[in-house]
Amino acid sequence: MSQTLFKVRTIEDSLKIFRESFNFVKFFKNREQLIELIDAYGRVLAEDIVSSENIPGFNRAMVDGFAVKASDTYGASDSLPAYLELVGEIKMSERPSFLLQSGQAVKISTGGMLPEGADAVVMLEYTENLNPTLVEMSRSVASWENVLREDEDIKKEEIVLKKGHQLRPQDIGLLAALGRANIKVFKRPVLAIISTGDEIIPINQKPNPGQVRDVNNFSLGAAVKQMDCIPFYSGIIKDDEKRLGDELQKCLENPEVDLVLISGGSSVGTRDYTLDVLNSIGPPGVLVHGLALKPGKPTILSLNKQKVFIGLPGHPVSALMVFDNLVREIITDLKGETAHFGQRKTVEALLESNIFSEAGREEYVRVVLKHKDGHLWAEPVLGKSGMISNLAKADGCITVGLNQEGLYQGEKVSVTIF
Image 1: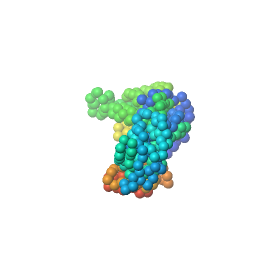
Image 2: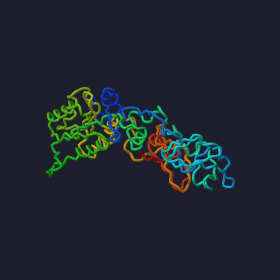
Image 3: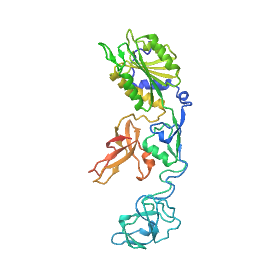
Image 4: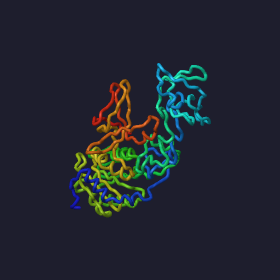
């Protein structure tokens, strides 16, 4: 105990000690479960998701207009339009049964399947029907312009989501597009919450002088739920070493409990037994006692028989401060997540490359966050707007303002986290 007693450590050092001491391979053995996609939001993947097919699976129009051979439109302009034979219209969900010949065009709606022989779509606003069999084109298109090719969004055998990824709404949409009705995820960690102290009383009682209602059970429980984990309320334990030891022993033996939060009793005082009890219930015992955090210095991090115990300060503000800075990171590890960007709504980052935009509109650009050269960088995710995989790949987005014509490489940007 003397080696860990109030030897104050940083959050980073404390996490390093925990990760070096904890047997993650053993912990994650048999923690996989199969659930329905409808229930999968917020869960962490226990498998790589590999596509069994191309998406969209056919060459698909991205705009309303006319499917053509791009070469038939080369050089077309307002002053020198191209004239093509109109040979019909492709209905939604219809598989065209004909081969588009040179000099022909067929009307198509957004999402429609291009006929064989077509390799581009001319937008409706650049065309005019001169009669039922003749259409005028005043704009040329390049090969595959305004078309989402059959494997351009997702390729067969591509890993689209990796093990350890926490599922967001756009990821659920991606899995639905792949037809994955059931997926394998990790079980959600269960956290026992114990409040200690003679002065702590249930919230439905009126406190006498010197007593306080039990705030931590509720605030910590809410924080646990926010992390998509399951709180297990163990109640209030008075300042009694034996009662605390018995309760911690129950948590130790409960196979459902993964982590125990003990608020109060973590400082050095005549009635603070948490440190002694934790050192007595199983090896290796207390790893850290004291954080370089204000408030939150008298914090205990203990590992007992492959179960995590964290002694938090009794003051609710201090307890939540430690939860936000230390406990969240440990919970993220126990959930199996590979990303640790935290719960922030926005982060500051440096832009990886130039972004060009048209003034007069607000544009949202999806980005991937990467740590490089000691900085957080935002790399734009390039691709056509109809590709759901781009949204799933992104960590967030940045906004190009209404009157901006772009953003420059190296510029500091605010990233809204998905």
